[in-house]
Length: 229
Image (cartoon, rainbow, N blue to C red):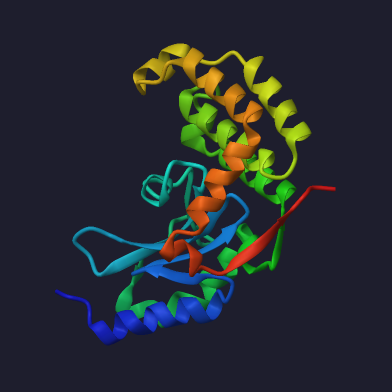
């Protein structure tokens, strides 16, 4: 059965009101720009059910254009209730659970309510996400490497010296090269790409600023990314 349009509008408005730092990017997608990142919330509809699950998302802005930057988030995390289960909210029961979900968001991702976000918060966020069960089971996988790449590039946006330190840590880690191959990634080429990004920081920053000028991204609210203490 189709979800009532007025009900969907109310759900959207409730989320925008509760998360004033975010802008409506598309239906059920609420984002803001934070330095070289887009962070926000997506209400992902469950298949074959008039229910949705709120997810925290982080996308990079350093890819070649807006479409590739937003093709898939490097962080996609569902919120859980006090029983440890993911929220699955029926649209017609949205009001019954909304306050509880907002409290969960404040607990797990308080940065969604901040005007200024520190690099340390983002680094901690990536490190915490890397410890989730399906990722921690393979600590040297390409998926873990991709998270470290995101941490390196986010850091490079404001602190070249710290970014270089992260790159050195990446280079000395015992990565599972077969897992890279399984994802069609040449590990040596990946390492070279990171080194080239560091060496060409100005080009990297220019690409980010160009993506921020995309019509839809330019309309998003933004929070300041500050250097860690």
